[in-house]
Length: 125
Image (tube, one colour):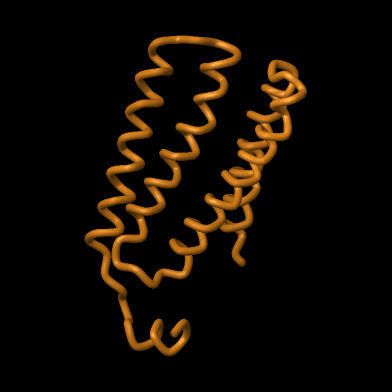
């Protein structure tokens, strides 16, 4: 655990907290639990792709990191666009980030290679 990893975790956690705090007054009480579940799932997803990137077992880890960042941007901006400030520019940015994150994730899955397969095989299988 280095300083940059700790700062990254704090930054992602703060972004998720800021969006939840911004929307907590706008969402009805019966949907509040779903928003909190989605926020926790987004944090778990971001920790997962960050751990895969930091472990440096795959050749194209930066593609996965870019896909995760685009997903966080997409899912952070979508509720703001829906509940607070609807703007067509935000909608276009959300769609671009969504398609880019899906494309980069699929590219990571199809083209990545394990850097040292013997070490990974001994450690995980």
